Length: 369
Ligand code: ADP
Image (cartoon, rainbow, N blue to C red; front, side):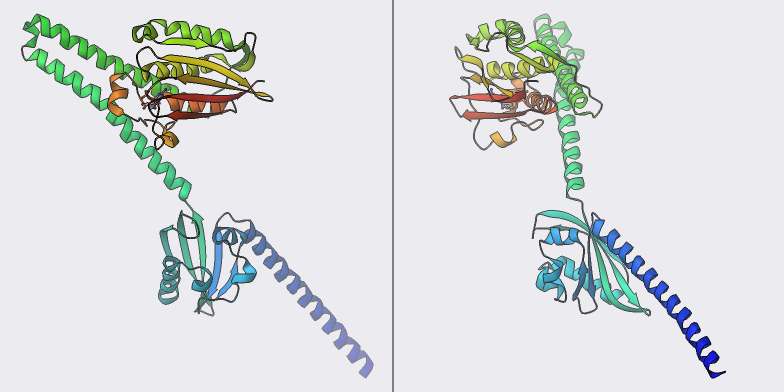
């Protein structure tokens, strides 16, 4: 009798133990799942207790702040993350028990912009800590600024010739039409500004086409020296006016596999600049250097050169060393950024070496096949 009661009890305990085991397994699985999610998050996650001691941080947070979980755990937040802005957000959450969301520009440990979302952690309805989710929005903000600058630049560039055109048309309408000699001059000026608008819009269309993700390069094998000679022929009369000599020393028969019309545009823009910013009776030389499976092309000129401080920004859209001079020479400030995009689309890279007053060497490297 006693034995059978004992057996029954043991069997009841066994099944209760089994249920406990299953629950522990369930909790463990749940815990592993949460850890897997936190570990794979692109956002940094940091948990602190009510005294702001660090409980846990995920690998992204370790990377952002360059600190390991081992070195941070158990320490006061400000000791390991010396950032008052984030500490203030934590204090606000622990005090107010409400989530706080803030955009913070950090200088340390890296110069970045973060969106910080902080929420209270509750245990039995009492705030026991704070959970920080840190989202890196540096790139988004950078792109926004770039877009804003681009729109402002385009508007400004379009406005200048338009204002002139409108001014001269009004003058003509107000009576200058009667003055034969001046009216022809005014019309010539209007024509120049209309040409400017046209060039600018063409460059903008080229740039937006090259930058669009849909662009497909029409690659073919072609003779580089032949293409360059064609480009040079197109600049003969422009060069002659300034007494500039253009020479190509590209080896005959050098074939590359690339989009011919795009590479033609690269040469056109570089040779155009080499003439525009050159001195009277100067020279333009085009030559190449064979690298392992690549080719380096140099367009050298004896022109004004580029001040060292401007060189890092010279390939940016609308960046010009001397705005007035570029405009006067019919420049849009987009030529070099078109060059850079085309070369990068081909898997190559561009650069410039220049000495102010002596001249410039614009170069690009392209894979041969
Ligand atoms: P732009 O239409 O003004 O020529 P680019 O993008 O082609 O625009 O060039 C940007 C700026 O770089 C020019 O305004 C000029 O200041 C400078 N630059 C370009 N090429 C040369 C060169 N060969 N020699 C000196 N300065 C140059």
